[in-house]
Amino acid sequence: MYRVMDAYFAGTAPFRQAKRREDFPDAFVWQTILDLAEVHNPLYVVSADKGVLAAAREIKNAVVHESLENFVASEPFQTVLRRHFASTNFKAILELLPGHLEGVASVFANELVDALVGQTVRSRNIPGETSEAMISGVGNPTDLVLNLNAAVDHGDGLVVIPFSLQTECLLDYAIFKADFYTLPEEKSDRISTSELNRHYYSAEEEYALRVEGRLSVEVDADSLKESDLSKDDLLSILDDGEIKIDAIELIEVV
Image (cartoon, rainbow, N blue to C red; front, side, top):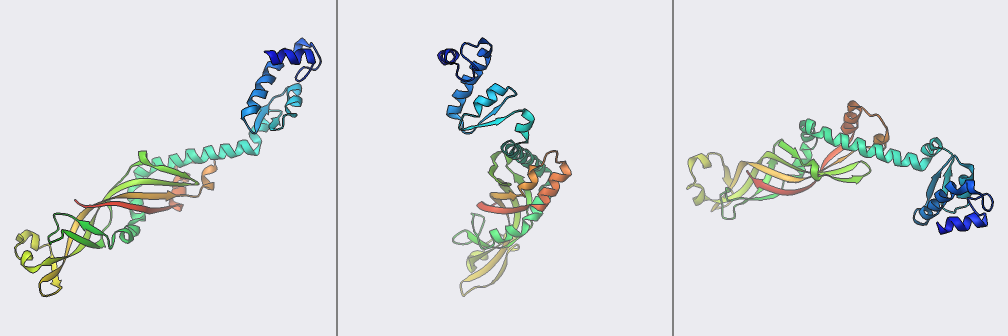
């Protein structure tokens, strides 16, 4: 209020002359603009009032537009708008994923082989002194579950999603020959053995494994910046993207 009165008597902006009462409404707006200019850089001022526009052009960090149409058409606004479309469309793509889990699983089936082969599995169900085995073969993933609530959006069309699945895997381990012959027939019939050395067999056996980890979904970020993308458009963007295993965090025998 004090600054408005000072400008009123001095005839400074936005008053066109001293003691011009008609400029009082603009004076309060103008002081608000000055306050906002203290904390926003740049400050966008949109007004059809020529007096306010003229005064605003004197503010160093103000970007002035004569209409909302011009402001909306400006590059800074369009950049924010495209970012909004990209975020909205990306969320829509993620919402489509639960209905296309089979496709997702088939896409990174080969990566699952690379990620699991050579990994060590420990379980009391594995016979042998150490109760551990090495994965030597990997089947197709089944029962894929994506935890979309825990998805992390890294921007630029990349999101990382926790997942869990099951798969049949061939496990290799060493078993003491004497221990092998004490196994129940139902168990031993599932094990293929070959000579390892005088005292041990090299054993192979299939196990159902539960696997947890993170997968990444990356799509073309620019293609998401369009408005009014249809479901088919979104699916096409997803099909053109890349789905891969980001990390394996848990392997356990079911």
